[in-house]
Image (tube, rainbow, N blue to C red; front, side):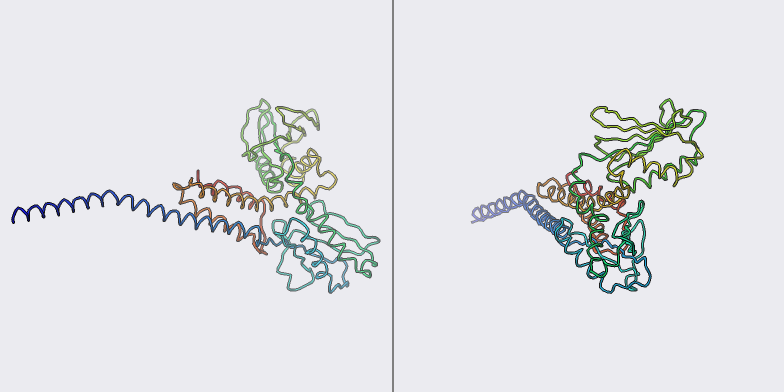
Length: 400
C-alpha cells in the first residue's frame, strides 16, 4: 500500500513538473502571439486612420481663397453682382481640377465681410478692382495679386460684368491653379546663386551683409518652390566666407547672379553649359552703400534678374508671383498625401515595428497642417507652410 501510494505521489509530481515545464515553454509564445495581435490591431487602426485622413484631404478638405471685389467708383451700386459672379466662379471651378480650393468673393462694401483684412502674407491677397472706363480692359498690378478691371457702361446694362470678373479671376489671378499640371510638368526648378565678390582690402560691411541676408530670406519666401536662392559672400580669390543653406536637391538649370565691387564691367550676361546644367551668369557692379538700400537695390534687382534669366515671365512679372504661390498651395497638399502614403506603406510592410513611437507624431503633425488649411479664413503664410510640409515625408517614414 505504501509502495502504491509512493508511486502515485511520484507520478503526480512528474505530471506537475511537466505542466510547469510546458507552461514555461508556452508562456513566451503566448505573450508573443498576444503582442503580435495587439500590435497588428494597432497597425490596422493606424492604417485605417491615415487612409481616412487621405480621403478627407482629396474629397472633403476645403481651402478658402478670398478674392476681394473693390469698387473704384463711388456711388455705383451692384446689389446682385457678387452673388451672380460667385455662381459663375463656382461653375467654372467645377470643370477644372482645382475643386479643393474655394474661391470666395468678398464684397468690399458689405459690413459682414469686413472681418477679412488684406495682407500680402495672408489669404486675402487677391483683389479685383472695378472702375468705369472708356473700354473693357484688364491691367495687372506688377507687384501685388491685384487686377484692375475697366468696364464700359454698356457692360452693366447688358449684365456682362459678372462674366468679365469671372474671366479676370480665372484667366489672370487664378490661372496657375487651373494650369498647375503644366507648371509641375517643368523638367526642373531653378537654383539661383547670389555671389557677392569683394576684394581683400574692401570687404562687404556687416550692414550690407545683414541687408543681403534679409533680402535673400524674403526672396526665398517669395519664390520657393519654383526658385531657390543661395547667398555666397566670397573674396576675389574664391575663398568663401559664408554661404546659405542649399535646399534644392536636383538641378538642371541654374542662375548665377554675381555682384562685384570695383568691376570694370557695369553688367554682363553669360550663358554656358557644364555637366548638363544650363547656367546663366549675370554680373553687376555694386558698392556697399548701394547694397544697404535693401528694397530698391538688392531685393528688386535680384527679383528682376530671376525673371530676366528665366525668360518665363518677362511680359508680366506678377505672373511669376502668382505661379509660385499656387505651387506652394498645391505642393503643400501633395506633401501631405505623400507623407500619408509612406506611413501606410511602412505599416503595411511591417517596416515600422521598431519605430511605432513615430506614428502619433506623424498623425499629430498631419492634423496640425490640415487644421490650418481647412476652411480657415485667417491669414496663411504658404511659403512657411510649404517648408513645414516638406519635412513630413521623413517624419512619417516609419521605416527610418
